[in-house]
Image 1 (cartoon, rainbow, N blue to C red):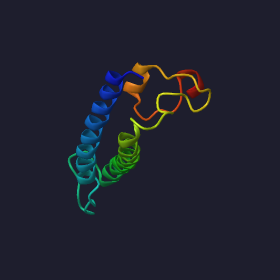
Image 2 (spheres, rainbow, N blue to C red):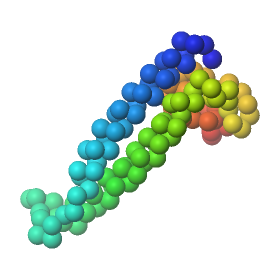
Image 3 (cartoon, one colour):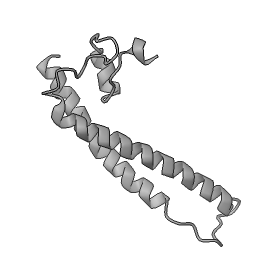
Amino acid sequence: MKTSEVQQIKEKVVEQIAFLKNEITLLQEKIEPISPDCSLGDLTRFEMMHEQEIFLRSLESAHQRLAKLQHLLPTIDTNANYGFCAECGDKIPFQRLLLLLETRYCIHCAS
């Protein structure tokens, strides 16, 4: 991978880490306990609890992705396998890496 491509990926990882940290903060606010008598118009407590469960799953997903990106950032320069498919060993296209920074598989092996 070219030095400029590595730099672009590192910048994108830093950007995504900052975004995820902000997203986690917002999601944590949305999973606060719901009081038993709370309702907003037609929105029942049950519906609010269901929505809260969705936020909780999103929060877990954001935490997992943040951990992967934080692990990836310091190893991009030193990991000789980064950018190569873990299944077939082919080079992962640069555009795919930009979209899925932590991907370990090429399009063919991922499907």
